[in-house]
Length: 61
Image 1 (cartoon, rainbow, N blue to C red):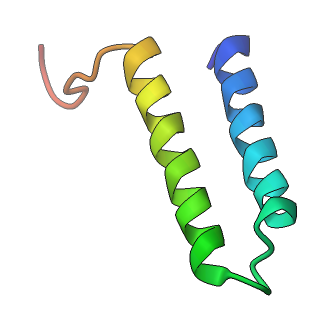
Image 2 (tube, rainbow, N blue to C red):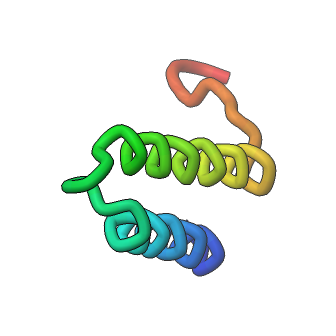
C-alpha cells in the first residue's frame, strides 16, 4: 500500500474514533452504528474510485 492509502486508512480510523465522541455508543448505539456504516461506505467508495481496478488474481493469465 502507498502512503496515500495509509493516509486514507488513518483518516477513516480517526473518523471512527471521533464518532465515538460525536455520537457516543452509550447514548445512541443505533446512531453510532449508522455513523460508522456511513464512514465505511464513504471509505470504500474512495478506495474503489482512487484504487487499482479489481481483477482476478488467481490462476493463469
